[in-house]
Amino acid sequence: MVPTLAYCGAYAYMPVRALAGVLSVGDLKLMVGAFSRSKSLMESLLSDVSLVSEQSLFVRDLFEYFKTKPFDASKADALPPDSASELALSSRPSRLPTRDPTGAS
Image (cartoon, rainbow, N blue to C red; front, side, top):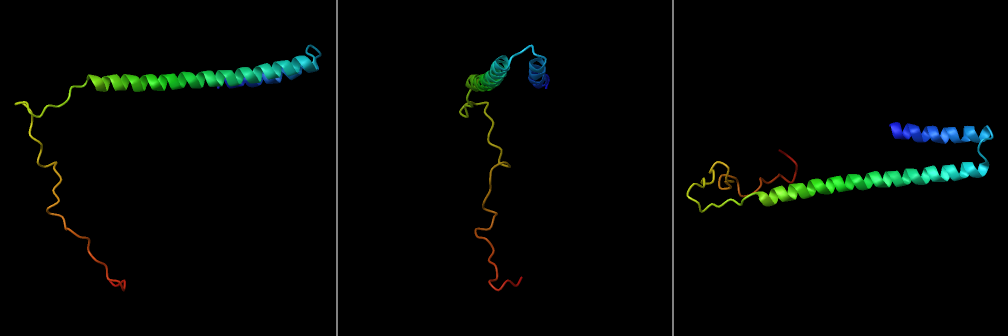
């Protein structure tokens, strides 16, 4: 918010200085061009910093994943799979109920 206000303030200040006779039209055009280029450069710089930050988070998470040890079910202290969490399809109907083509329920 503050950078935007400063940017708009600079754009408002330049014509005032030009109308006061301190800046020529050529100086005004040069300053406006410099400000617009610097604004686009700053936006791209901040965008690149944001992308680097996102990528560093991804790489950190990736290395944390690499540090995890795989589960070995052949060990003696391994827990058996929970039978309650297994999907049991035997108690489900094997086909969907049919509808009456006439639309009567």
